Amino acid sequence: MTQREAMEYDVVIVGAGPAGLAAAIRLKQLAAERGNEISVCVIEKGSEVGAHILSGAVMDPRALTELFANWRELNAPLNAPVSEDRFMVLSERSAFRVPNFLLPRCFQNHGNYVISLGNVCRWLGQQAESLGVEIFPGFAAVEVLYRDDGSVRGVATGDLGIGKDGKPTQAYQPGMELHAKYTFFAEGCRGHLGKQLQERFRLRDGVGPQVYGIGLKELWEIKPEKHQTGLVIHTAGWPLDSSTYGGSFLYHMENNLVAIGYVVGLAYTNPYLSPYEEFQRYKTHPAIRPFLERGKRIAYGARAIAAGGLQSLPKLIFPGGCLIGDDAGLLNASRIKGSHCAIKSGMLAAEAAFEAVQAGRTSDELAAYPESFRSSWLYDELHRARNFKPWMAKGLYTGSLMFGIDQIVLGGRAPWTLRHRHADHETLKKKTEATPLEYPKPDGVISFDRNSSVYLSGTNHEENQPVHLTLKDAAVPVKINLELYDAPEQRYCPAGVYEIVRDADGANPRLQINAQNCVHCKTCDIKDPTQNIVWVTPEGGGGPNYPNM
Image (spheres, one colour):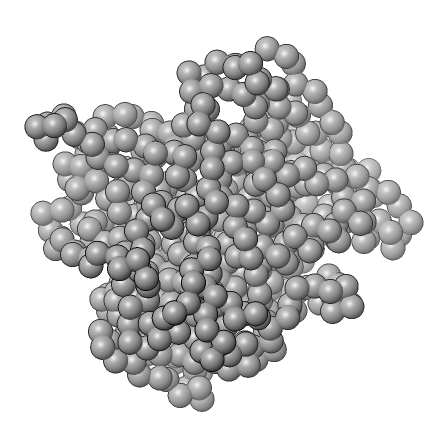
């Protein structure tokens, strides 16, 4: 094999999402302000900037305004200011609208914008490149590199042209080593390398488990008479039972587009529950279906969401690098927003790294980053919202009441902090203790099967490459998952990647992994009850290609 070449930078950033791009931009801004130079490289596993970005998304522009006070003049794609908030509690056939004066501030979106976060990231990428940032899409970081003293030295990108057998093909090209004084990890929720770093440096010591949701989303073009630019609708309740955390969003963008989606907390207990099917069922509700009728579904995607809040944040720094954005879990679950958190965290980390580089430092801990985080409005916002997910884990009605008191009466300043008791993979009941769920067949008009949905995601992987959904023990899926839980990976995967297949006589069950369908949501890595499934980065450029998502 050909030896890897190495490139040297002051700062290397893994992931061209809002956190990574904001960090790159802020580094270059500071260099221009000071009349100094700083070399910055961003690598992105998606085929282009924005290809893997999936969010609701309603955006709070606070952090973006701090990054670019003139974002309007720069034509940032924030074109649909929120015009109206509606929050409804659904039963199977009816909907109760909660009066807006009863909604906590976190559910009020005045001053925010309905956006495509993928398009915002594409715009941020353009701004970064205009400032001199080097961005390399289609390059997946597969390995953290370390110095002799144990500090992070940078990352290596994956080799191209490795076959399923693990051997080089005729298309083989070695990856690159990217060395840096400091490396930022901005991979998004449940980052492959971020997970490794948290284990190696024990970043989670003394904090509660991170907890997650899965968000499923479709983009629709609807009839003009049903469209209201800036209308923001959230629901709770049906189709989930009152003990299972979840809810929906329906956001009216510009040009008759609506983003519709569903979030299911991954602490659910019934192994027969399918978040994908719950989403498809939700769209048939009498209060929701009329928006979509005679419309056209354009795109589909799914992504895990870090929802644990402040009490689940790991230590943000380690020798030679840091975690930013949702790689650290910096998302405000109560507001259903993370992009402003990600941008702010990237800026704070960039300011710490810039001062360190200018002082001639390298590979140490950027202590100024968590210090500035703790004194920032971001910390204050997350502190006010910290009890949201723990309260909602107690059920829809009890959770809503208690969080309402927390926010409206106590202003998020309750003298207590609730803790998460369990990681999401620990919560499934055995199949003998659970009630199987029957889901209606898709009608092909409002509800759809997973295969047609994956097709709309633009997902593709080079077929002749090692499967990136790895198993620690190949026997576990049948001996434990199938035997005890009826193979829940068949249902929690939103792309139909996992399938139990049998011989013609029904014997010899085994797990088939359809890795080409994978949309990189990471749910399997999170929810697998034995933690036997490990998601690793596939060949760069593979995965979904989300348009306007």
